[in-house]
Length: 156
Image (cartoon, rainbow, N blue to C red):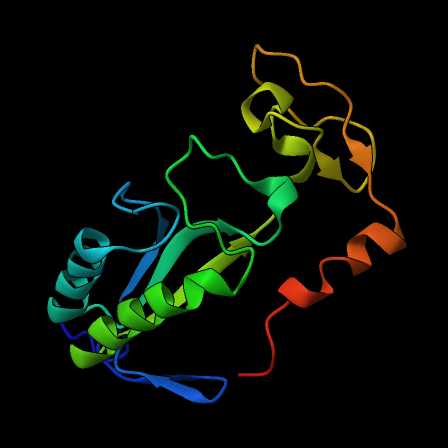
């Protein structure tokens, strides 16, 4: 059986990915203080060495209102994470791979007792389906959303 398409490069925006093998977004639980540390970098490097064309990190909160400090995730809320992301990208690139950070905001899907603070969402309706009731979310406004602008990614 031929896998000519699976093993052929593909262009995504300005990048050419070496093949179409994808490792979907997940958090291996190896972060250190909310950033990729040596263990996670080694984990991702091994996947690139094994031939993955594109790897995606697990969901990384882009605003402090979406942080769950107990969850194993990257805290992508300010520039402190950039050196760790640079080390992660350099390791994956050294093996010929490409990696993306999956940006997220959990909004009304968060449980307020996990967050330890009011949760922000597009409306005050909770999307939480866990057995633990969530308090109403803070309904975001254009002004509160504009506070996220400094957290937005620039042009690649």
